Image 1 (tube, helix red, strand yellow):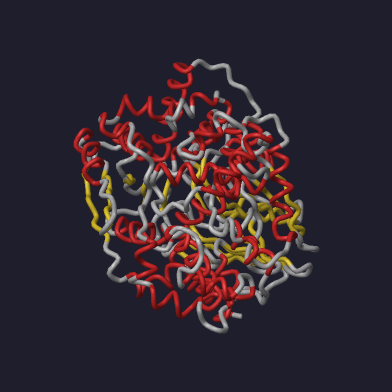
Image 2: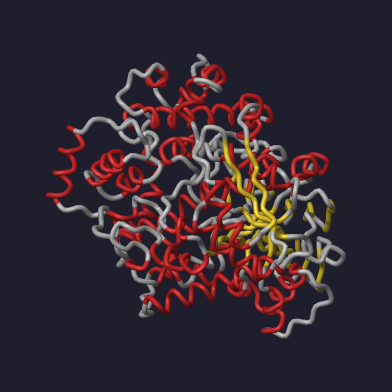
Length: 613
């Protein structure tokens, strides 16, 4: 795991890069220069500590690489690659030399790759299938600069704010695919690669992997076959992620089935496995459930109690780490959890991706029965009438809130249905937002491609969540939270085999009646105590309502109620005040989410943009 950066026709400020990326690679920092090209590498040494130094060279190729290729030894054997180190970096170089970009199809891992190819006189950049490892780039037609984090890139180049993308963030809750809050700065999309001509630098992007392809495949596997195949793929994924490290690998262990299965299988490959459970003051405590798994497998278990006592002092720093407005409030506990885990080890397994791949969200249940993206007249109008007469819910996790949300997205169609069913921060209050259809035009185009495909309603929303929520929010959150503490997170459920197999399975293997994540729950019966099998999805329970009214009340108000608040350019100032003073008809949870979205925007504007503009 590392931090990378580079440039064409641009002189990098190396001391600045070293400061900004040090947390991603504290073990070694190296810069390579040739002609008008620079490559900069920060190393967090995990695999082949002695032989894995970067940049690494092979004939006409030079590479810097962030991530891990867990099956790299198998790739070596399959293609008879002659390597001199144990490093997966050398495997990538050899495979690229033999196959070019097609080598990416062979890799099971997480990666952001930069290869200087002298024969093509080009820079080759690539990201993994799900987008676990980030890669941002700046291009103005004359120069090209890339880096692992937005903060480090923005501090190298002079740029301005992309207002359309900020509008996109406010409406959607995250930045869509290649979008960032800056002009001329983009993120290389997940599952994509680009060639950049050294003489005329511009990114020519190719999509090399798309989960939509695998949703269009129709598997005929029986449930028993699917269950056994999933078990086999998970074993292989966990084994690879435990053994591909010269450092100890531990596992996060919550009270859920995703991390529970991962930890149970990991114990087979690490007899001294350390597991970590966290609990937060004032939140539902999953530690007793996690301990049942730890006791069953006799892991070296650690229960970490996290306090929010220093939240007021830490919140601006935590949000500023992202280099962009980031509204997912679970970034706060993720930061604290990663900080505590790093005190014990450097590599940790997690259950990321399980919900998006296997069907873990409650909102998937109605989509398994009906395609709400194309509602009939009767359903749409009935839902509209019900939504009008139903009172606004106050309890986010109540059955009534579930019903209310259902009537809300059922009364709409196409993209508004998806936005309402997922991150619905300003849903219903669009009239108070700056109107700009261009901000969501690309989102609409991509949505309609999926909506007009042959997929079922369930497949559509799961496909969309993988492309949008997972890549744009959840994986961004965990990458920044873990790497802020030089901690590497590995996600077996996002392995190549599962990503290319599970989408093809029947809907009923994912949602069975009202049961979410059916296949994985059935597999869990083999590994986990019965008490865990049917536990509802929780994740980190964030007391956001309480923060808005207590711990963070003053600091949030000082940002979003200021006369010069940046957010007032995008949201009507009177609405911001009415929302703060509870003069709008909405539940406390949604109110808190809207305020937090604007607060995150203000923190980014002042701590990231203005400070280095």
